[in-house]
Image (cartoon, rainbow, N blue to C red; front, side, top):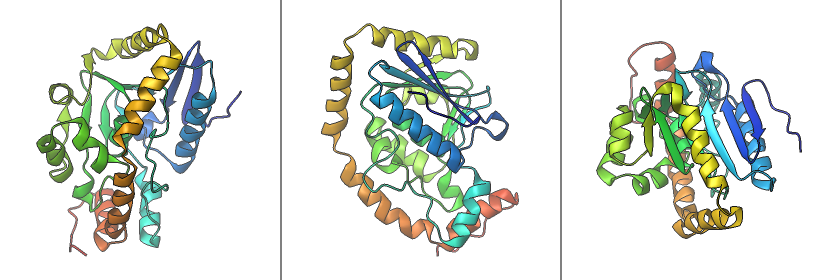
Length: 259
């Protein structure tokens, strides 16, 4: 099946491996609505194509894997009262994809970009990669599954530091706490990701998919996603959620009121 993709999101099939590339490097690979729709379509095709066994997910260029949502689109929605959280109450990025996804992180992996990464299985990072969730600094919360996933993937205290302080960590710190699997020189990033994908492709695809499905389903994250959706609504509808992104775009300190 041929899936039409915009220039800003590439979907390539290389044998049994699907390579997904966020292709907007001039904007730190920040996602637009069009790009999110393209990503959803690509992963749906990947999930349903029996000839594809593993996906490698990355970003174009060396500056950023993904910096989350494009604030130019996000601010008008916030101002109009439209929510920015993930639309489905019980699903989050890749939460119903049962084939392996390998992330190749080449630079900033922050905000929504880090939320996408949390929905993947094996994470390889370039030495200059940076990880963070700065939403609270802008009056927002990372409502793409982070509150449910992150404390299960790394130690509680580290997860809370990322969520509550909002500062970034480097690749070495991310590796030390178990957020990523491996650090490599930037020039070797895709080569290493493809090597891991090829190793997985030597295994039985039915066994691999079943192993991941059992791991995902037994975790039973859906109730947490529902709670995250419900509670984050009070943040996204607040004055602070309008003020924070505006202040960021205007390069000034936000004036938060807690309302």
